[in-house]
Length: 460
Image (cartoon, rainbow, N blue to C red):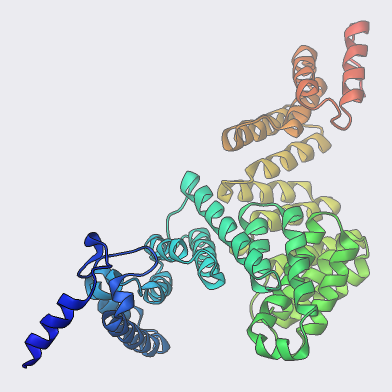
């Protein structure tokens, strides 16, 4: 009897137990024919392993384009592993390469496919959250375009998957740190960010020495959580907590240097400044300035100048401002420079400084304009006070879509001192509508009512 005849007899003898729609390679939600006889799946898995090994080699050499040219899109380059559902790991790697090339939209599509396939995988949620988070930094650095609704959607995507990742692995350090940065830097919510930074620190503290060694890559983000936590604490007016965090950051990071020394000592000086400990602030800031003496760090010198102002040493303050090259003096440096000059009685020089600031400042110009209004008031040039204050209000409303109470106050005061009592009263009433508790508004209204009642102009 030959082999064919023997097989035919066996088939005739075997009862038909497989449903007709599944016979000959059909599909069942629990067991497919390929799973029953897995030769094709095994072949696809071997192909996947080979692809991953080659990608790792290319990644070590930062050859992201080469990796993508070979294996992306995977539907075209290796359709057999897609068909048999063993493509998730390759998609993750493709997303990693796409992210490095700032092709974030494509990377997110790949990772969303992965997370839909394996919804409880920490690493996929983490990768998707980080890719969205990284795209926000690229947009912030003007490397890609991402604004308006698209930006908000990207923030929401990162938030969703950071939360999913930390639910799966609540002892993570990195995820809590990165979600804290998302809240602080992109949502501008330091109060929401602070507990996340503190949780990152707590998670590191709770690790055993063995686990710290195993997860040593996370130590960097523990250090950064201390530093950013100090910043968030200061923004939420918890200066003592901020001081504790930055001191610990200094101690923990002394050897590793994950955060540059000038930034850590600047943070220390800033906290002391907010605590009105001006000598301690001065010492920390002087050290921060020495950490990178070759590069004039304008924010360090600016705050140090403010410390010297608080210590009643305007000449030393001006020396610090002078260490920032004039062309590199940003608006906030100019504001401090003008304050120093006013303290020294050099009002005209202060006016010139602020006028230079106006020329370059398209975001916070109203602050320079209000300073000009106050200086002109100090010099008794009240029409100029009104003019600068109005310009401040116009700029702010155009830029931010609402009225600026401070501009209304100085407009009203300038009008009052110029003898335009009716205009001053109208402006002051408008200010009362939007900010009834504005400082000295009550005094101004009292003076205006007195003038109106007496019918004469009084010198106030």
